[in-house]
Length: 370
Image (tube, rainbow, N blue to C red; front, side, top):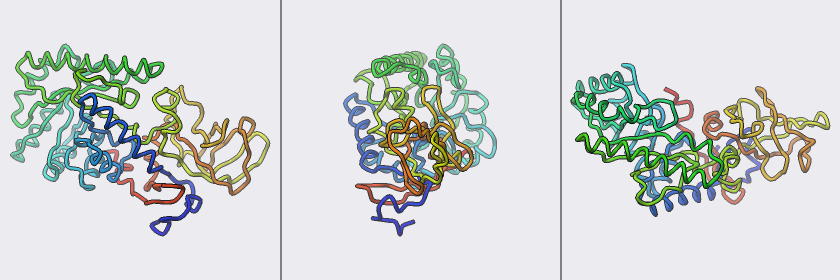
C-alpha cells in the first residue's frame, strides 16, 4: 500500500476509506480552539477514527488524552503511544479485569467509568491484588437513559465506592445523547448548557458530601464547540467531530465541507434507467442509519446521488434523482451516514492531500470490540 504514496486517489482500489488530511486537521483544530476559549479540556473519543495517528494529531493540537468505549480500543491506543486513556464504559468479568490491570501497567494514566457496585468490586479486587490504584469516574444518567447512576443517588453511590480501597474517585461523567434530538445549532447550545448544569449539579452534591471532584466530563459532536466559559465542565469527549458524517450534516452540526471521511467506490454496472450499481455494499457502507439520514450514503459532488439500497457486495444509486451520470469503471466518493460504524469495516484509511495519497494508516482499533 505504501507504493501508492504520492499517487492520485484514482489509483486506490475500491472499496476504500479515504480521509482528507486538510479537513481532518481543520476539524481537530476548530474544536480545540473553541474548547480552549471556554477553558475546557478536550479528551476526544476515538470511536470515530480508531487510529493512533489521528489520536496523536489530536494530542499535538492540545488534547489531554483520549476516550475509548472498549478495552480493546484502549489497548490499541496504548500500543500506538497514547499515555492518558479514559474508558467511558462499564467493564465486568475476570478476563477484562486482567487486561485492565495489564493496560494500567503500560500507560501513564488510566481511568475508567463506574456505575455499578459489582463492576467496582471487580476492579478494586483486581487492582488490590496487583497492589495498584485505579482512578474511576462516576457515570451519571443525565437524560440519555442508557447506563449511569441516577443523579440523586450519586452521593450514596460514591459513599459505597469509598469502601473499595483500590479505587480513587476523580469525578463525574455523563452523555448528552438528547442533543441528537435537537433542531439545530441553537438547540445544540441549549443542550450543551443543560448537560453542563446537570453534571455540575451532581458534582456539587458530591463535593458537599465530602468528595473531591477533579473531573466533570461531558460532550458529544452536536454540542462540540458550543460550551460557554464557566459552564461547569472540565473536559469534553466529542468523537465524530474530527471526521464527521452525513448524519451530522442532517442534524445541522456541520456541513458537507466538514466531512473528512468518504468511501471510494467503483461503478460496476449501469443496468437500467433507474439505478447505477457500485461495489460498495454492506461490507463497505454502514447500516447504522438514523431516521434523519436518507439511504446509506450520498455521492460527493453530485446532487441527488443517494445510495438508497445496499446488499453484501453492491450499492444502488438512484439514477433518476442523480444530477449527472456515470459509466462502468468510474470512481465515486460517498459520504457515509455514520462514520463510527463505517470506519469499523476497514483495516486502513488512505490519507488524501491535494488529490494524492499522503499516507496509509492502519486502523488498529478496528474490530477491537471486547
